[in-house]
Length: 397
Image (tube, rainbow, N blue to C red; front, side):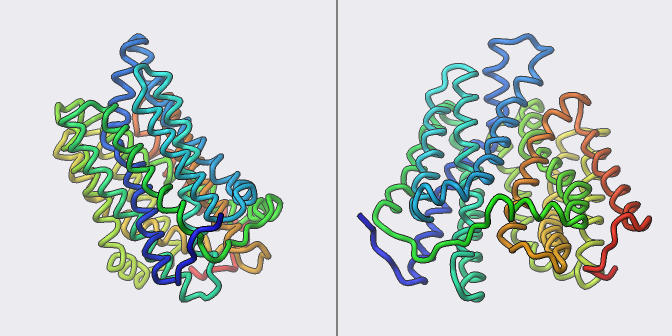
């Protein structure tokens, strides 16, 4: 039975609520996920293996996000459209959070992260699919503003709510509350039908993006390294703040600094930076700033320095994430693949970076390896361009 079909303005408002609730539920453990994983791991393994067991659920979750994005086109067809796909995604994320909430030992919690990772990947790409299923460019832009705004608000609310709740009740109980929150989008979707369907390219079309040498170079040398560094906020900050003796509420507050600055300083910072340089050069500057900040904290440590670094991280993200996407889009040139195909590869490769990062940090022993990877990536990107190994006619320097 089909649900109600609403006019675009009302549909946007409802979808905004759906993505807000999804991101609220999925982000509710951001301030304590790795802290809880570490505590459960300490019950079953020796101290020398703790690092490995802490990184495993986060790595597995990121890998499953890649699977969710990669299989999204197939799932859209199986679910008979975007409405069914969103229902499926909401159910999977609620199930994963329920498993987390029922976890009384490490491996059950690990399973919850795996399930949620797949659902998170589906939700993440669905935000873009929804906007691009509309026909008129102005409707696409308006819908992107609606859904991205809702998703960001949900992430902020989830982070701070989870941090506050974790200071009052058990971590497992917070996850159970998140499972209930994630059922709300499913209930809303049960009574509606989204008008419009996204055009999803075949696997061959999506992979054709990687045949563009300029795009591939940008992905390997800049996008993957910079997204490896995102674990500094989600992984390093919670563990270090906890080791300094502060609560999950403090952790969530520090993480919120990054989110708020990245979002609300973005229009001003992006405009200012692009008035000074091209998006390609701005991407290199952004990468260098992130590498320096991580190296600075790794060498000197301390809670005060951490807060300053997180603040500067937020300012860098406020322009960096936008210019990175813009510079990537400009590598397309005259290649025939669609924007959706390019977007899918972009999202997958960002998740690849996030997946690789915990293992790199574990092997090397600290986050300085992320700064080294950034430096090597920038050097190779500049060298391959100046050496003429890859011709770049898409953007003037």
